[in-house]
Length: 365
Image 1: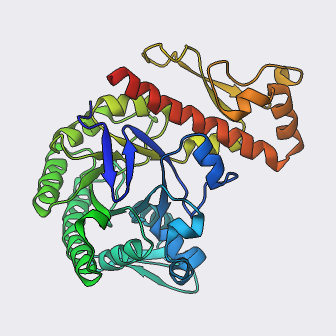
Image 2: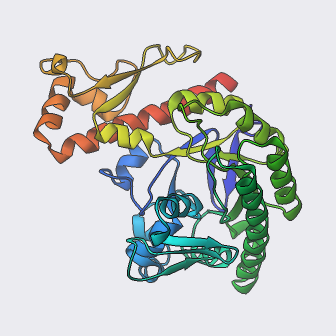
């Protein structure tokens, strides 16, 4: 279990564990910053790979960073975009190539080329005013061959050195004082090979970062959490460093990964599920320990049984949706395709996630 209860970043802080919604393009779909504050979201994860394309770096810099652009005064973590580039390029080589220089890509398979190098990634993240910048890494699938994983580790370590060098250069150039610097995290690759995970972690620790992330796809081919390799990766990093479980956000997986020692979580699943009609709710009161999977169930709002249901989604939820709106009304909004459904459903699922981290903090105390 994590040894720290809070992470301080500039004039901000995160109570740990923390779930941060994916605000890939600078926003969480269907909700605004006031909505997010109301349901106690502490921070957001935005994506350099996407932001450099839309709205574009010059637009963000014209607003003097993401905080003003998105009207979000709290923590912003910017993912480097390594995973997104990996996903794009592995669809087809027409979308780009990955070399030791960095990632060259064409988002639509034609037209303008973009180059995302380790140096460029850090330059952009710092210019965006991010509170936590993440090194560019060479992401792989857990089922990739050992040869591919070895190359990934070598490239990730090389890119991490270059990212750290550029990070230090940017801070020196800007005369950034210690109290005002963003934190920098590196990502541990190695797939399902323990020795490669160890090599990557030790190399990154030698370079020196403020925190570390679990890199690579966290599920096996059947959708099961890769518990052993996730646990090993945490064990390779001293407890005083925070660990970000990148892409892990299914509630049951979050609880299990937290108990393995991870602190920060992000995932698009809660908001995507909300928009598609799958709402989360607890089956047990707030003071009940979370054990197994029985504490979680789903409400499928399109089901006909909800047409005349006057109850809210959950008796154990304090979100504004559960306080004011019935399942029958949400069913009606969903079936008629009104945009209000997406906003209300997103608010509920995200409050479910912040309640989950509150429960975990209470269990620790």
